[in-house]
Image (tube, rainbow, N blue to C red; front, top):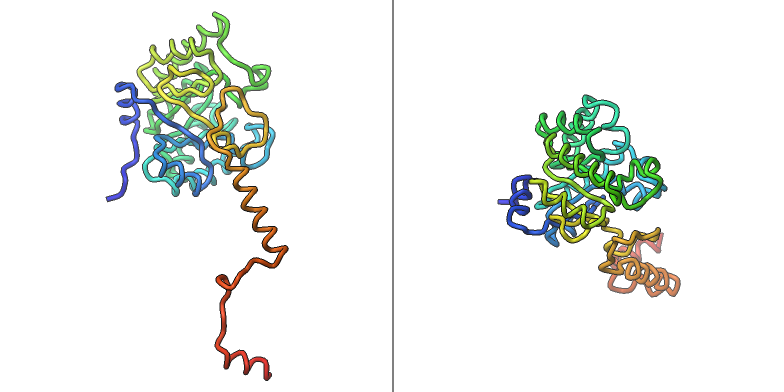
Length: 280
């Protein structure tokens, strides 16, 4: 028998037991295979792929088709982790029927286990519509990259009392609408702690402190692969880019010096065949 994937019930149980939930992004087959083998609990196919994979300057340029393309590879590469797909910009904001259609297409074509969307009360109808169709939904509050322009940039959210109260209410709206998990991004740790304690569903933090039920980071940030500006909340755990550069430089040097390919990399033909070939 194969390894069973984690379920929404497993993740809820982890919160009850105060067992921290791990989440990391992946956008392709080998990365998904690697993080799954390492034992990560959840994989997020984030629209951050627009910046770290496709070279866009933001996340709102990412299309649904691009998300599905990468999501298929991630699902194929993972066995145990619960795979969550970001719904990209304008695939769920227009109305709840379109949100359900796009969420359904995403799940049907990728085989992922859930979808994530940004926003609070204003998207609660979409969350309710999608969950009632049997699709697990993850909410996302705080700094929501798809709305960063409206927020005045990538800034910490919920610092004043009015904004903090709204975020708490939005979190409750999202939970009541049926979401099974919530991501909090760039939120004061005190507010994140309050929200985590108020909700019965797991709360995953990214720049939201240690009191959340789990943490998420972008794979390229963790591995030191992304060369853009690194947010304060990021911690790099490896310098994979340095090692990869060393490997590519070694290859280039070997080819230039004619050290590669060596004898061990060559194929041969029978001597009589070579003689016959040269005689002609």
